[in-house]
Length: 424
Ligand code: EPZ
Image (tube, rainbow, N blue to C red; front, side, top):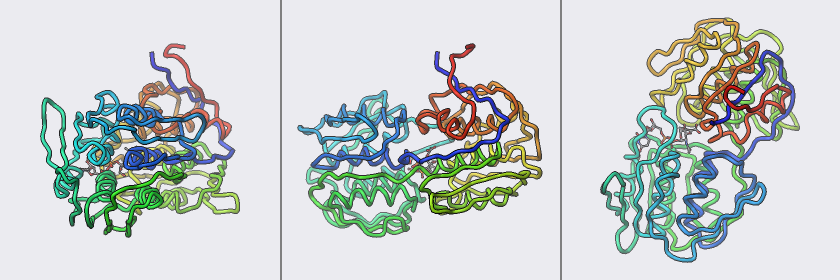
């Protein structure tokens, strides 16, 4: 039986957190290692379930992977891989889509089932595929497997306009373009910091990229890339989770080495709710001593707007606020499956379309709830910290995809939390 998270809530939090490397940087970076002719070292990689799944994919493709401590080393395959990806890890996470372009370059073909991942509503991959087709790839379906082949001479550069600024598709097409023949322009690209991080890594390997982090990215393909030693950016969603925990439970948090930029619009929403957010020499401090206020309506969006991944956790921190708040997700249809668990803890919430509405102040109490997805699960844990009594959160497997040890994260802030067997 899968372990559960338990949280004894209702006490203010105090302490500090050093952010791990961002999951959403590390996962595309691991796939990008396959583009490299030499070893790739990624620094400070957290032990996440999705990283473990990525390692299974890399090993199946013939890479040697060493991960003795925090730093992870990927050695390129010694022989040309065959291009067929194993079903288990592909279906376990959305990030298996990142292997399309690197495997096309390495093997000339790729065959895999549809990637899995959190159920946040429909998550097609048409923008990834359309872009690869523009670069010369052919796509077909064979017995529930997606099969792509590159032209005999390899992918070629193209001028591609993305239908919408998909983070993953921007990363796929960047990885395709860096080793394609000729120049590529990506228009309508996503601008997330994790894309800039991927570009920075690829540049360190010899790629020629300009404009990453803006809607238009230019790439001049090169025949070979070297390896590199790279420290991925810190995880801004873990930062938002810890900050939201302090907003909900009260207390004070130091996000060591963190700058306000990393919280982005989350910082202003927390200030509107009555928290103090201040930059200092050691990092960013988030504190709440007084009562919480509702923040009105918050819309998520692509960077630099309020991050969709932060919406459930920040909402969780505001469930006890005196006054209404609403979080409307413009990215995913089904972002707030955690609403059911919030209600079980006594929150006055309702889902309306893509929005979660928090109708007014509530006294939260511990409850047994189930994580519906990664950020929804973290949000239930954040709510549990603000609730009187003990809560148990099932579905820890979702949470472990993005948080190495969420109980330890909260315990570093003085919370009482840990893991137990169901019924234990
Ligand atoms: C990335 O997912 C993140 N994952 C997600 O993190 C994050 O929620 C999301 O970006 C938005 O910021 C990783 O980086 C590994 P998208 P991704 O492509 O790339 C539609 C987390 O909790 N779309 O920008 O899959 C799609 O359905 C998560 O860490 C298409 O229609 O997001 C969605 O509505 C989960 N066709 C929207 O675009 C496509 O081909 C944005 O998706 C691709 C996307």
